[in-house]
Image 1: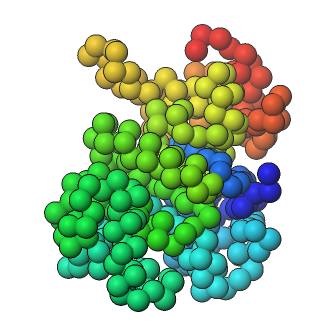
Image 2: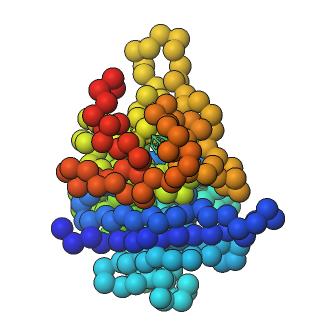
Length: 330
Ligand code: SF4
Ligand code: MG
C-alpha cells in the first residue's frame, strides 16, 4: 500500500543551557490507510517530539529540524512554511493527547467546542453542527449524547473526556490520527475501552493510526507495525507479530519483560534497570549499553549501525541483532 504519511531520516536538535541536544536522530517510518503503527519508548525517547514535528507544532527555536523529510501524500511538509504545513495537517492529520482536560476549554460546554470545530472546518450552520456534535458523541459511545453536549468538561470522567477528544479529532475527518499516550491518565479498564474504541474507528474509517505509548501491553492488540525508540533513535522496527515472537533488540526485549501481568501475585512491574540517558550526556558507543544485558566491549566503543536488516523486512540497531533475535529465553 502507498503510505499516507512518510517520515525519512528525521533529525531534530534542541538548544539547551547545557548545549545542543539531539532529540531525534535518523528516524524513519510510514503509515498507510487502515494500518496502525505503534511508536514505543520511555519518556524522552523522542517519540512525542517527532510527532510534533509531523504536525508542524515544534517550537523553532529552541527546536531545529536539521535533516530529513516528512511527506503527506506526495507533499513534502518540511519545504512548506510552518503555517502551510499546519494547514495541510489541519485538513488531514488529527492528534489526540494524553491530557484531555488541558486540551478542552473549561468555560465552554463540550457541545460548543465540537460545534465551533465543525463550523470552522466545514462551514456548517449552528443547527447542523449541533446535530453532528451529538452524532459524533454517539459514535465515540458517550451515553446520553443529546444531554451531555450541554455539559462542561469537568462534568465528564477521564475516560469520557478522552472520548470527547477523539470526537473532536474525528470532526476533522482526518486520514491519519496520531494518539499520543491517549490512555496513560486512565485506569486499566478504561484504557482497554478507549483502545478498543480507537481501533474500531480506525478500522471503520480506514484511517492510518499512529499510537505513541510507553506501554508494550497496549500495543499487542492494536498495532500492525511497531517502531521502538531509545535516546532519539528507532532501535527496532518490525511487524507486531515478529516483535512479540522474537524481539531483535535488547531494549525491546526489556520492554516486553516489563508488561504488567495481572496473573502475577505481588510481583508488580519488572522494571528495566537504570534509566534513559540524560540527553546532554548520551553514553558513547551504543546509547543503551549501560542498561543492556547483552553488552560487550564493542558496544561501549562503537555505535551499532543505525539499521541492521533482518529477515521479514525488520531492522534492529544492535551489534548482536541476530543473536538477540534468536536468543530464546523469552
Ligand atoms: Fe546491547 Fe550492544 Fe546491542 Fe547496544 S549494541 S543493544 S549494548 S548488545
Ligand atoms: Mg510524550
